[in-house]
Length: 201
Image 1 (spheres, rainbow, N blue to C red):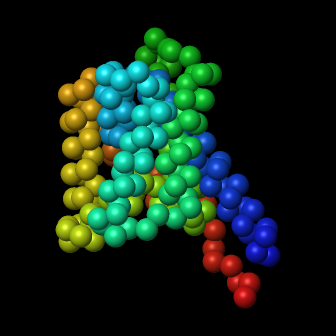
Image 2 (image 1 turned 90 degrees about the vertical axis):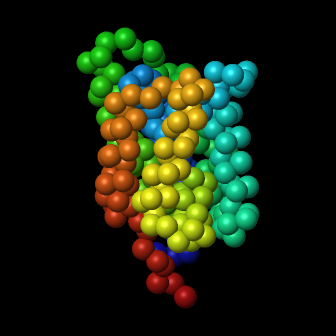
């Protein structure tokens, strides 16, 4: 594959992945069965500030990127674009996703959202432009503390869920389902969407 074509495919995959990520977040939130850990925090914050879900997501992402500095993590282009676009894409998705009352509709909404976030993660990480802000924070803390990745990730997510819940964010069975399913889904979709290294010299 020639370099311009490869760069074009990677760029498209990055943007599609980030849009799908925002859509997945919106689907999970609209299910009202419990949000993903970091989105519980976002929901909690928007209960106390006059900002949209997407705006708070951007502010949180930028704050997390700043935490990379003492951890000696270097953001890639994808890290920066992720921080700036996922929130607006989530807000855009909320505009056309209706509020649903029927549980039999909200459960598949949750499932679709979790799968969408897993596929989105495979798309944007597979594009090779760098990890998202929260992924980089996790790996940076793993290196600095020497603790296993799963312990670092669990500690981070328990912390943000607790803070978000105390602020009024939605915690429920969907939060647990997300925590249990997102790892295997990301692993699967990373294999599907990873772009192999170019053989061009």
